[in-house]
Length: 584
Image (cartoon, rainbow, N blue to C red; front, side, top):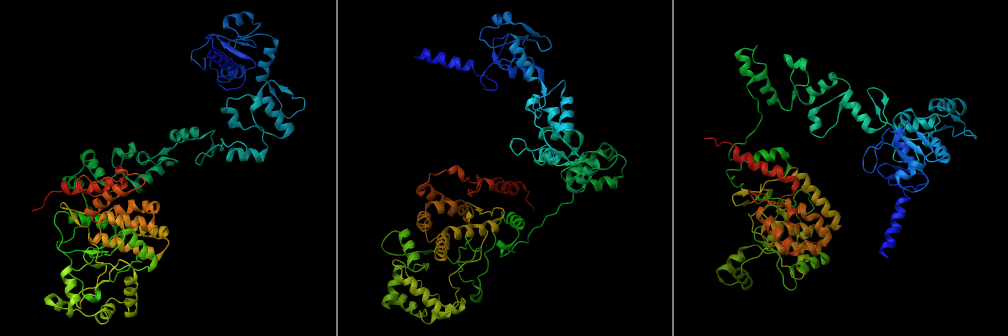
């Protein structure tokens, strides 16, 4: 059975050309005993002028065209005609006519298919008699038979040269050189012409940009605008003496053009002009998030070795209320007002309580849990702690006053507290005493310290933070759910939730797939290195789609969690801080 299969496959291979995969009617057997069809052999030997075998790459001395199978020696002895110019032996008259038909120049329009001796005569005939033309670029570069070439009228020829043929998607026209007003057969020939006959910037090419210029004067203008061109002495005649930075140009001038200069000029060439800014000690910009990202990096580098003093507390009238609909207060949430905050409740898991709270009322109150003793004392009204609790204003009086200080009406405060009390498992937060700032968002800080290092903001931090909130709003599609998501994030950042509880709550609120889309950017923009590590461990434990730790690289110096796009820029800051000399 196997022998029969082998024989069948061998016979099929013998009847199919290995070059064009067409059935062989007239075969070409070369002296290396390899076989191809006579069309491929004629194309190689006559049009391309190559005598080597396309299979073994061995140059052949002669080849035989025959309809029968057999060895080269036996078929060569039976050949009746020879084509010495192309080193071919033709078996009989029928094979000779088939070979001549491949090379014939016949008119494809005339009914009698009139033949011509040369292709030039055929081209003149179709233009004069039929008002049709061949593409001169295709004729001069494509090695194909005359019968395979296409004829065009004037409109179709212009479309062919400009965009290509509608029935041939592989040909997209002949590219035009805008400087020479000349077309080329393909993109490779056009590109070689630009590099050989025109000019290009080698500095931009190293950066991945291919921009060509007509002559050197236009290229020199580019050098002056984008780079630093030396136009002194011999460099003006040599041309192409250009540098990336002004420091490199000054170093070149100090070494190559210092012979004919005075000492003052030489000293001036060695002076480097640097632009930098440093902030005075003790000053701290409070609204970093609205500043430019470049200024943020400079300020963080200046404060890297000395911790900044804590910001002064805000007066009650300036304390910002919690605005969960803002796109600029998430996830860069302050830690001052949210420390110790947690979501308390009874019955069911934390994720179930959060989901039920959002579906029932859409309002979640996050408060600081009081100690057990303080709670019992306030409830019973006895003891020293109970008396201190009585000094705190009641919900109807102090709550209204606190609501007015925060810019929130009493009716709104009561409505929020009633909705919160209706949620099973969530307790109502006590109103703060007068004189203390109400709970809300604190001013953003540069980041919590972790092992002596502070969180370093990635590039375009503010814009990325805004895009993160917009993405969360599109995925959640509910203002109530978005408010719950922001409240959970603020609580976790303040220490009121563990990483696993926060991760599980977000999974329940958004779903596994939707939370997986926002998690990478949420993790990277979390302004606390310790919280980043805790949330990453929770993701490794609770993720249902498979955990990939190499997707979130950590800085080897400060352990901040990053993405690969921010890794090089972040680590370079440590190099700059460590290499900068200490000033006495």
